[in-house]
Length: 275
Image (cartoon, rainbow, N blue to C red):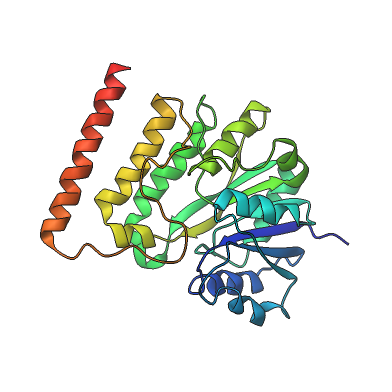
């Protein structure tokens, strides 16, 4: 019998974070699911950390040469058997009622596309007001011409996902936003499950620093909002994988980063005002 959920997790060098997510999945109150780890041929122990969980639930570890999060998600979904696909990143954390609440929302609303609310890890609780604001803005965007998502966690009915062509593998990033946007063109609006939250890792922010981190998301959002542009080219540095960015080692480098990104933000505002 096919499971209700197929959980697709794209990975690349995630030996540190993947076991935490898999441990969260062992604690789920809803048990009707399978897991597909779609790996981009990691060079660390990602494959090995799946083995201790094989006796706990149905888990399939597959690999693809395409080290692209959209391609890995699509490949994982092509091997799935569930009715609903749950895409979630390897560095996310979820509570024991995560899948149970999603299933209740699906049964109650009969929807095709769902998005949980995002929250920071407990140790990063100082960012909670910012996350609350982003959650509200993304939810409001579902009624606007340009729609946004909330990162790598999306729940979507499998037949509908296949009908609209899955994730766009040609994009450099923001494939999740584009999927939600395309779903809207089919008349399907994301439904937010406020009682279901995913903890969002801030490892990029901690490695890159606040200025660089928020600049990148500002640029992506601005291009989508003001220039109606999906991100096909490498307009910013954005690594996928568990490997972290190098730390900024001294004050001079921090100041150089600040001036560099401040000037780019100014140039972008000039383009917006001129358009």
